[in-house]
Length: 158
Image 1 (tube, one colour):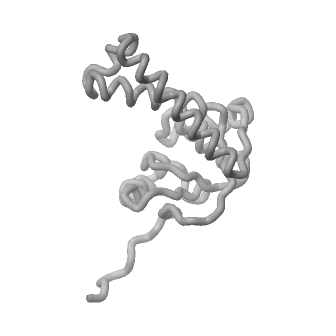
Image 2 (cartoon, one colour):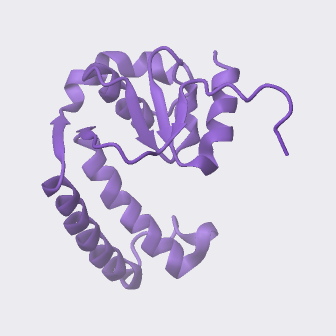
């Protein structure tokens, strides 16, 4: 059965493909990866409602440290197999307030500003919030399950 009507506009948001990409990221990514490992360990142990209050619980901290170590090793393996460049946060700071004014959080604004500053104009993400960046400033490459939400952000840009 053929599709009816016109296909949805992509709004410069696309699904991952198997192209060979160079990785550009800010030093902030290293911190966010470690924080994510801690959040996973705390959520596993205490659930989503209590994880913040239990941040210093020793049982969760041991698991968090192990996860952080594993994640760091995996990240280093990705870097070893890729072309990459790390951008210092100071380089992109002038653009961060403008991106935050569009609705991005500070960390996400740093990541978007990094992509724009290095001139790749594309960001690979699993966060639909990056759809808040203007279509002409940044192409979003994401998993197909996040396309709709990201495109919705693009439709109602500020």
